[in-house]
Image 1 (cartoon, rainbow, N blue to C red):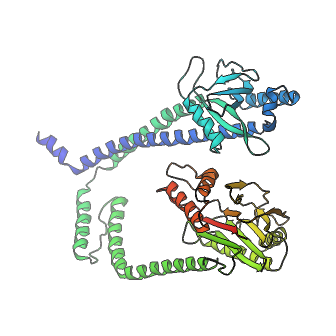
Image 2: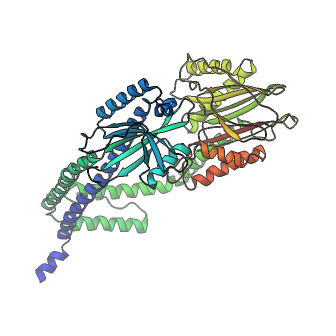
Image 3: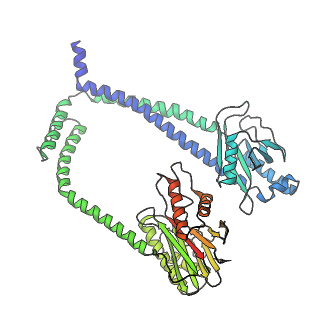
Length: 540
């Protein structure tokens, strides 16, 4: 009993046993964590690649002719598309590609348009649907996915089936919209892909990597046992005593030289000595470090004020003008941001509106924003249409900018006496217009290339008329791309709905309402992009 008690109280034995157990447990934990991370990454890659397959297949389908196919029209084109989809189904090794038109009344049924099957992929027995066959929706999950794609503007949806149903093996179904030429959802394309590849990839990892990691951990523990045979208690106790002395006195003590036979003990002693020296120096330098941090904070605060002063932020902006009203706001994601807006009278009858979004964030984006804003303002005052102005600005940005940054810009010039709006869109978001007595609607226009990307670009003007009482809303992508804690995007549809909720309010109430809606949607999620908005109303 005395011998057992002596062994249990021996520090070296306790350390050896602890290392053996710790490394064995660590090997198992590391293997499991690696497996979970690998499995998650592989699942995401599998889902993403299936989405890209579906997106590619959707590009083979003419959304304008889906309804015509059901009535026997365009049959040569239908046959050619069917052959393309069938070849694509075989080449990418998926079980099923089909195109359907869903009944949007209740999403309880759909009509088959294309149906391409490759049962050899996973030894399944899918039944081919003929053109025009009406099929009931399988379950509520599919109905929700269909509604999301038709009504909520989702890019794609995925349905997982992890249990085998007869001869139908586990699979994922990726669903993407098929658009017509007007950008509306004409139908849905679905790709069904077996998930046995994911299971096949997981098993070798779990057995090979997991087992090998555990064995290596055990071997490392055995090696530790071989090298922990000499006395370690005394040097460690001496080091511990020196650390305790320093904690009491806060002064540098005697040097700890030749304290042990192993580098790890000598390094520990050296670390204690270095800690003593560093702590004394730290106490001496703490005041200087604090002052430096305050200086950096003050400079960032000053940069924020400079950026704020670089854009018009006093409202009403033109108190003497009764024929129009304007309001805008910008909320950077960091201390300084890459968004900007501007508005200014070119003469008594022409008002320029500008909004832009520089790639990136922080100080570099803010500097690039200010350069772009100044260049547009100066060139606008020289005269010319928005297309001519942006062509000039783009060429000069490309010529004088050496970074890989670019900027999206919407520039409009309003003839206030007639309401004629001439605008150009350099890769920016579509504008939203509310006609007098109507509702806000997204206005699809031609998009040019982003500025500072290609110096040979020539932009094209778009012309429309704003009548009395009409309102114009322009914004940056920080609004539709705002996300919540569930990684869901705010989206254009929600933005337009919010605009219409505040359409009868003032311009300031509209912008503050949208910002409040975005904040409420995002919740605790951090703002990752600048949020900028500008609203204009023609009153006379």
